[in-house]
Image (cartoon, rainbow, N blue to C red):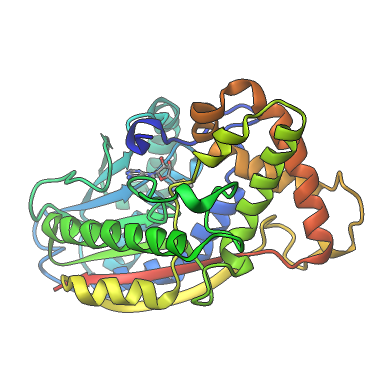
Length: 370
Ligand SMILES: C[S@@+](CC[C@H](N)C(=O)[O-])C[C@H]1O[C@@H](n2cnc3c(N)ncnc32)[C@H](O)[C@@H]1O
């Protein structure tokens, strides 16, 4: 499976689209904002970034196609403008480069731009630093920008996607990710792929960033080294269970599950630190963690009191997972199974939520190019 040609989030702004089902990712962006603010504060007094008529160049990697994308761009520019004001500096011009894979629905993003530009002009008035938005299609596991051309790289909920499905997962049987029943070589293969990908990601970003350029990455991880902890694999085990239900009903071939594994890896803290240290191009300024419920508005885990299979928590989670997995699943299993698969998934998730405090465990890392 060529991940680079298949992977994208559900397009458009309909019921199953990523645009309509990305509240989790929006919540995560909001929670990571203090790190972004602190990172930008660290450079606003720097002549290298803000001298003369300098244009501040930002890249958002794995931007997808929802209002989250332009919310990130706005937040970054607002922070820079506020910091410039505080330091009696003229706000810079901005170049915002939105990157995602070739199948991303950039058109949905482009259609949001007229309102975005108008709103910024209205809100910022004369402080409005002119802003030029462009799209950069391609994999962030390749060079995307000229040498030393970026001041700030941001990426949220994207870098845990791998460049490819790891090799050597034949023994993963009916699992579709690392699972409690996976043999050791599966954990090894996933860990190795992450190490290779993240190392290369850092290397090429260090070529693209100016000296002392900054990078803020938010990604899903796990709180412990054990790759079978619920943090990492439960969501996928429930999806595998739903696929198996469909095997029993004759709608999915067992062999198709055996040949399907998701190109994602949720690392632990040491895994991240080791790659950054060994690759060597960046100082790790900070690494913070926080978690968000699978159904983000349910901050008090009232799902634990819900005892029926059709709970809204199950439904919300199923819609969110569908929005980011459907193109991958469709390319392997075909389109016809998707509605039924997520009906089953919704019920499995709802059942799981009755007894479990589910969460995505997240890392936000702030890096400075050496
Ligand atoms: C869950 S979405 C996050 C989107 C957005 N940052 C947000 O927070 O709403 C992950 C995005 O990463 C993109 N992605 C995954 N691997 C990528 C790669 N190698 N290069 C570029 N984008 C990638 C996917 O296509 C997807 O749009």
